[in-house]
Amino acid sequence: MLSGGSDQIHDMKRVLIVLPGAMVVRNWFSTGLLEKLGQQPDIAITVVTPDAGDAAVAERAGVVWRPLLRVAGSPWMTRLRVMASFALHLVIVFRFNTIAGFRGAAQRLQQSRRLRRLALRDGVPAFSFFGWPFPRSRWLLHGLLRLQGVLWRRCAQVEGMLDQLDPALIVIGHVQNSFVWPYAVAAQTRRIPVLGIIGSWDQPTTKGPLVPYVGRILAQSRNVAHHLTCYHGVDQSRIDVVGWIQMDPLVKPKQAASRADLLATLGLSSGHRYVMLGSSPERLGHNEPAIARNLAAALAQHPDCALVIRAHPNDRNWQARFGSLHSPPHVVLLPPEFGEMERMADQIRHASAVLSPAGSILLDAAVLDVPAIALAFENDDEPFADRLARRYEMEHWADLVETGGMSLARNQDELERLVHDVLSDSGFGADGRARLRERHLEPLDGDVGERIVAAIRSAANCGRTS
Image 1 (spheres, rainbow, N blue to C red):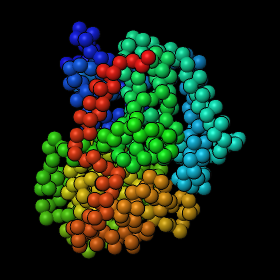
Image 2: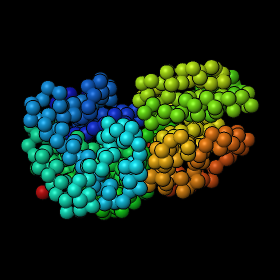
Image 3: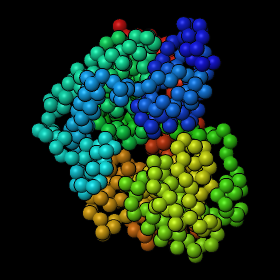
Image 4: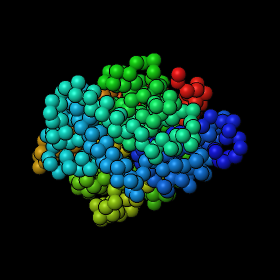
């Protein structure tokens, strides 16, 4: 059944789901969550994303797709509002992080101009001019938040959509994104309840204040819920801990590949072991090819162990970076994949260890009880603030490191020693991974999708606010 495609829609509660970014879209589209929502008999789902290519996927899932607020081709006033809103968002995020005293935000200001320019391209306010003047003024921050709300009053594109759909509920899949503001503001003026979801585990400590007018909030873990209360002042009664939707395919896959089948897809024999490197995009992982090359040479003393390099989904230059290292069965280079979460889970599940420079794949490894080694190099040829080790001093990573659920490799020799230890002891670091799962990843039962669907149905059936 295609939601909204029959007369039955008039007997349903309409729900509008706003997913403003690619990673949030992936988590909803690649985990079965969208299909679960499309199968509900009492709610009609419309999903909003930035990419028109999502329309076909949404239709197959039984939901209707609409575009996120369009900029290209819009009236000049809309384009100006979008640009002004995004610039104001960066100013607000900078001030929020400064007032909260986040170490990661302060460290970023000490990085080289190259890294800060890359961060700015990703929407991170990495320059101090975003805080001029009086960056620690709470009064000024609150005034800027009010200005952002005023800026998005009467957005014709969004208000026209809401008036046409007349939803009983709006779900915002990333409550710290600048592009969801017009939806939240329009919902408030129409007294439509808003259910918020934290887009990722690190966002309460890095992505600025929450969009206003959100009622209940779904959080991944008790630790994320704590951050919402501690840094954002959200009352615990408004927070439901539902788990990480992206962990469902890991914990409860539709069909898990056997070790023999997985090794065959990698071109390895049934007697092989392998360690997997989950790389970063080139702009963040410029030193990774050298790390991989040296590690491959060290693994020569373990002829039954290969190095598998899983290129990052956003790495467009992966062949130039790693292509020369591809030499099966000693080194296997896997091309980028976006959304193949169960295949990634199989690759992690059967690895002897997973390596990454501050990538969430380390958490995936902990879920599957696979040793995780974090590349935290202190390279003398890099500025102190640019080094990989600084990433693990950021609040959300420091919380994870404290559990002992991942090992930090601060140089190439230490990395090779850790890999040797893992290959010699299959239970290496198991106690720490158990602590990490308990504190930061639970609940891990594969039923996160069901809890999100139940929360959406419950909120939709509560009706509009008075």
